[in-house]
Image (tube, rainbow, N blue to C red; front, side):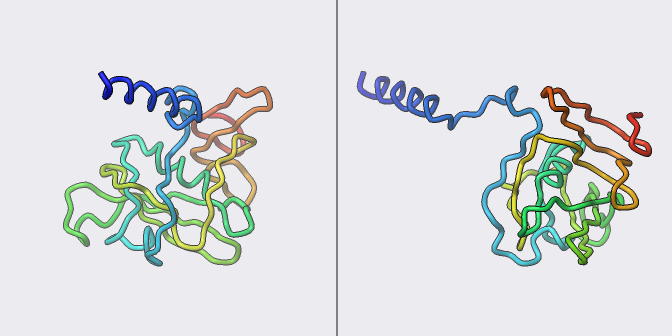
Length: 167
């Protein structure tokens, strides 16, 4: 009887402090498990960010949309493509992105087929925002490619953009 009561009390306490998230309340959220202490985490095909999710790369975009520099400014990114299968001897490819952090261009590698407690890459911050556009751009300001736009009323459009127009 005591274990059952203890279990119920634990569930109640977690629900009161909000530790059990509802996946329907946060459909575009990716949990990050702390900062990586590895300075090349995500920057090498041998050490990709394993976000899982399968064929649809939704977790990759969730990661990139919440990534900010040390001043809290969002990064811009562009998908380079699938890569590295032969180089690291694996059956499924990694997905490679170019990100711009101030004046620095970096290449990030994601594994969308395996999941392993995704962490924040070295020297970046995490800021999940629910306002405006988050996604691929061209010419530094034009919504172009895959992205999500959060409207003031709480609605959103998620999908492909072509020169700032929904496709």
